[in-house]
Image (cartoon, rainbow, N blue to C red; front, top):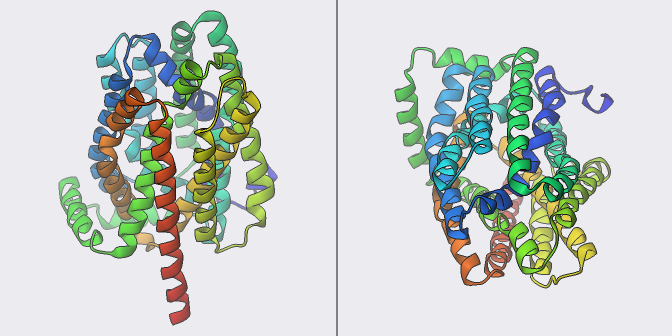
Amino acid sequence: MKILNDLPRNTRNCLIVEPLWALFGGVVVYFAPLYMKGLGLTEIEMGLVNSAGLLFSFLFFILAGPVTNKYGRHITSLVWDVLSWSVSMVIWAFAQNFVWFLVAVLFNSAVRVVMVSWNLLLTEDAREDQRVKVYGISNLIGSLGGFVTLAAGLLLDHYGVVPTMRVTYLLGALFMTVMFVLRYFWTTETINGARVKEKVKDVSLFQLIAQQLSSLLHASKDKHFAVLTMIFLIAQAVQSFTFFQILYLKDNLGYSTTELSVVPAVNSLISIILVFFVLPRIPKNAERLGLLVGFLVCVGGAAAFLFLGGGLLFAVLFIQGLSSAAFLLLGTYRDSVFMNSVPEEKKAELFGLVNMMAMLLSIPTGWFAGWLFTVNPLAPFIALVVLFTLGAGATLRLMSWHEETQSAR
């Protein structure tokens, strides 16, 4: 693939195998609320599962940086991906009730370790000016699952939500495991990862965890770190509120499963246009501007969602597609801003810390979103407008500090 030719080996091969995850990852995430409801869970129980996932995620983020530095980006990504995806997908496939989902989300939350190790395996060997492209392609691949979701929606309508999703989870477990093994054999430890691993080889994991917690206290006093944490927190909290969109569109506005399965496909199409025709035209070193644009478009999309009615599928597709592309833009530039603003030797530690703090603060949002939905189905989406607006404000603050730093040089 020519678009990957200029990228280092680890980055290129991580991206080559990523579609094996996207084939099923997007499907199971998108239709999870319908699957949970089909097995009898209430909106409050769904919210509690989401909050439990955030709590478990916080605990795993405590391990993320130390484990990644101690054992390396390479092997950590393999082991923890198998635990977080292969195992959890099998549990979801056989789930019967609320307890099964709690156990599954415990295993799936282990993906927070991989969020650190895989991000570094993907980008650490790449140059700074390549990282926006890398994250853009990565997020695009993740969104390509939308086309599979379109086919899955037809199967859900024909065979029913629960039996179709059970088979989907099992197939997902198989394909993802193949992907993790291929990626392990096609990549190696990053240059910086090998250096850090050698540096801490005589330091125990418990000592590294203690050092990380100490670093957290120090980092929390830094205003730049605090604002980045807020941005990561907003991006994390948003997922608790958007979780209920498919239920609102189906149960409150009357759209069919087949109609709703078109949404991710349109999202994917718009994301392709964004990555190939928009991102390349955004000036280099404009990560903060890209982040701001992402938040502002998300504000507009969330506000427009409040005025949707039944029988307006085109409007649903346009609003959801635009919002999805904006969130892809937001994620691409958020991670690029972070990776390009911290020292090389501190990337694993600080990436784990910022995600850990964001996860800790977002723990109540899962339950809160579920409760809001039971009070008023539109309430979670009003909260989205507020969250994205706060994100835009935080990004403006980052831009102001960056301009002050550049002027001082």
